[in-house]
Length: 319
Image (cartoon, rainbow, N blue to C red; front, side, top):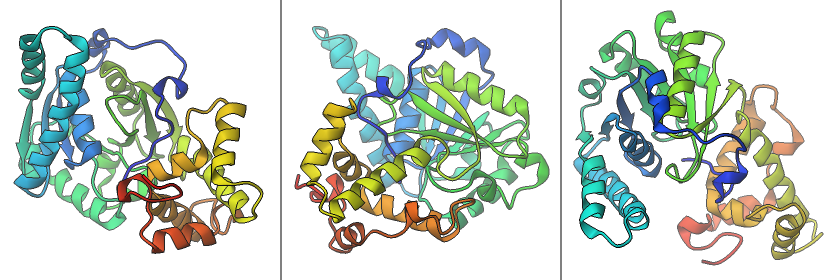
């Protein structure tokens, strides 16, 4: 599971571009990414593009092959734009970056030399806790452990770790699609050392992204603001204030958003939205029982019908 804001990355962050020269400020060079889905493979691609040694880990060779395919297709698109008239240069570009990525089905072995480990697996707190409990036994003491979760508390994911590991545990929330989206939320827990936060920020800049540092709170920055916006849009539709199309048009032309809220809901995934808001309403820190995150009849009906958005071919719109 993942979250997005808009298709247009420049609307996320206004600030200076970061070049690969920032690499010198980061001591992180060996990266292990756990999870070969679109998010994990995207993170691996970006790290490898900026000359990091990357190991991509998943439970099966089949899953790893899919992740490798995601990366190759994405890099080929980049190469065609970069070297439009030179097929040899295109191939060399893709091969060079893919050559920095190794694949593994053995997570403990894969983290044994890592400077940074980023988890990008299923949004299940127990699965993540168990994973990091295993990885902490194999990773060097200097390794920074990070979760790419979009909705779960970073501190709770690290709950089974000892104090020393908790001091080197952080959230690194990337946005989909990773190669295009500039923002990375750097989420600090109460236990994390400041030097770990500084190292994470330097690394995010080194891979050409823009960091936004925040406390470990439900939704971090983007989703904490984004989910109420989407839920209120759905309630406008439920109250028959306007159609989905007209609400989308109003927000695109009136607020300057490149996507309307219903287009965005379909892109994120209606099941993903329901999972997050239900969790926050049930036991989110400071959000429990908040009517902003109460259940939506329309959203519940669409999810029950299997209309999950773009990924299922139908959501608020048909695709």
